[in-house]
Image (tube, rainbow, N blue to C red; front, side):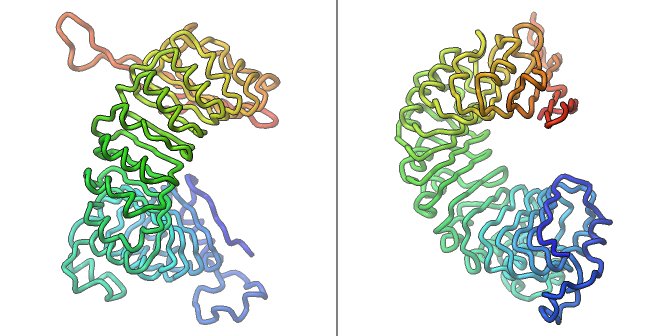
Length: 450
């Protein structure tokens, strides 16, 4: 009866669950007299303060609207990858939200602006992958809005949204993709001055100037994540030299050319570095420069650094002996003669090695578990084994290891075949997942890569 938090992401939470939350139940004595005017006071949904149903595909748009009309006390709401539409945002009557995630949904800028107007305490807003945020309001959309706070302006949906944000909220964390432009960043200056975390993804088009002046607009940033953006040495040097509080830097699948000049700036506070498909020209010399400039790393992810080799292992383990997470994928020949130096990072909890050279020893999993007292997760690829497979440890010999993921690939002939050659490519087929509990080991085959 005192339920205030419901975290059920990626489950079958659906219509029946919504009906249960929105049904009348006996009211606890300490709530008698509070909000007595509210028609949904006697429902569990009314008292929820935290609701996370991210990825729950069974919830229909109508059920979501029904649920939102009964919630009032929410402070944290995650609707990512649900069938969320504007009606559900218009139905929400609460005004205490501090965290909202509507990423990968079909909400419009008009509806989100109305939603934000009602929740001035908002500190975290995540709206990545919302392709309906940009565009111009039509009369039908305006008429659906319960409040006439937005109607007379000729601004586009996203302009209306960012103007409302700048006037209403002081954000600590922000995620945007489609519809975010340099003009959006300028509008948001008043509300992002104290921003700590920022993420720009697919659809955001900031350009070199906006990313270069990002440290001036958001000087307190501690985490910067750029996905599918155009970057350069100039941008990266501006971020790394100006944001002295930066702890997390993640560059994923970005366009542009980065050279060793980008990493010659000391960042002693940086703890997490992800360079994924952005530095194909990185060499061992560049890696040494990184170890000197970013000496406090705990988490390292390198993907697509094709010029690295087996010597890179020693550079990583000697330069960052305290690493807790190492992800190396598509990195040349890093594991072509096995894995030994990486096991000198005694604090490792998470180890991922995929497509780095066919040389990993068969007994790596058990060997790593015995040498790394904190190791919890290992992810490998059958393409990298030199003996055709990996030995999996018994429950007695797994130590503290809790999960192992082994991805399998298949060869597929490329449609574009060069003359006098056979062009093939490797495709991920499935993943074998082993999970240990205190009593047993469970093996699952997932028909995709995890």
